[in-house]
Image 1 (cartoon, rainbow, N blue to C red):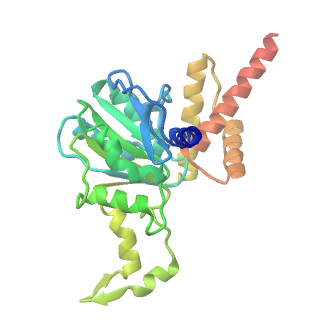
Image 2: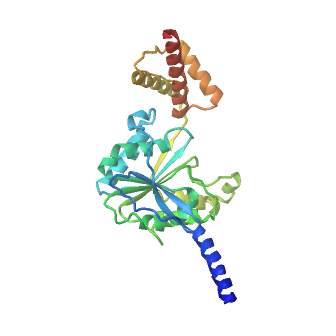
Image 3: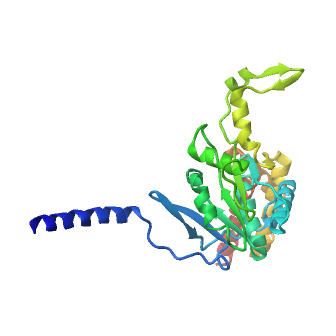
Length: 298
């Protein structure tokens, strides 16, 4: 009898420990009303968690990247129409609108059946589970991973490579993969990588190190580069953002030498010229103007 009680107590402790490893029961996502979800990892498994709030950014809010917007939007429209479309790599300088473009596309095309599943880099190993949860849905899904970079040999790197190549595991027709990265080839590049290059019949052939790095990014059918703004581009985007924010708040702020110099000082302090920096300057400039006007009224 004593042995039975001891065994029951041990089983209870084991079950309690196992219970902590398992995710709590979750309701099935209603994709009709849910436009985006995040893959939430829990111990050895995971589940899709609906995102209640999505940033309300619009395509018109993304300034200075018209050619990039056009390329990615056309690819997305092809996908939604059931036509051939490509997995997409958006690479380049931080703050230039790469991830904002994906969110803006969702806001624009959610009513046309577009959905987004956001996946952290380390969770890409769960791609088969993620896709299994959405493959039978009557919607088009972008599996989106933001700010991606790898070290060679990572398990998530291998899974993504396999999914893009379709050799071992390939997503169904209603799924595309979009990723953003500061690195064109998603992997760190070193000067030593070029030592293996050689000339064959007057053509440069990369060494194994470079070939391995190119092999992943080369599996994305569409590459879209985002580059730093020139000073004139930055000032033009800053001016446009000031105008937009003024219209939203019903005020008029003239763009002149003072605001131009202030915008340049702002970019110098940040050490960068991008759409994000231009928006941050405009928010500060217009916000301070509104506060000054409110103080005068008081």
